[in-house]
Image (cartoon, rainbow, N blue to C red; front, top):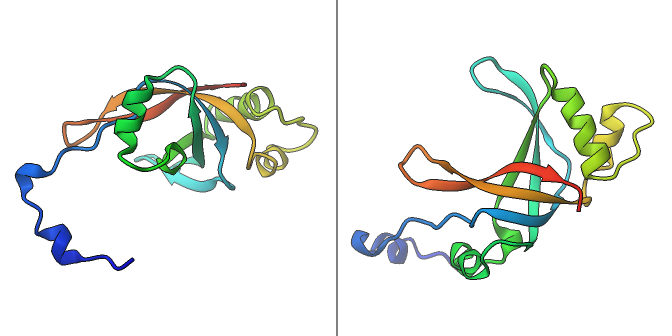
Length: 145
C-alpha cells in the first residue's frame, strides 16, 4: 500500500483526536527480542531497555483496550521496560529475570538477559502525564504469570 501524504496532510485539524492511552490494569506480556543497552538521563545512567509485547488484557476494560488500539492488535502497541543498572539496579534485574521471567540464574546477569526473549510475564500498566498535556500508559510493575 502506498502512503498518500496528500491525504494525510489534507485532514482537517478539528477532526484529529488525541490517541487514547491503554487502560490501567494487568496484562500478559512477553519480552520481544534482546534489550538495548543505553545511557539515559542527565547523569547518563546505564540501563537496559526491553521491548515488551502485550498479549492480552487480564483485567483491563476490553472496550477501552479496543478503543486505545484504534484498529491495531494489542501486540502492535509499543511498550518498553527500562531496567536501570546503577545503585540497586543489578539486584532488581536479578529479581526480574529470576522471579518474574522464571530464568534459572547460575552465571552472570548477561547470561540471564540472553535467555529473556520470548519469556512471558505479567505487567501492570498505569497512566503518566505526557509533556504535551495528555496521558500515556506505562509499565509500573512486573510479576510472574
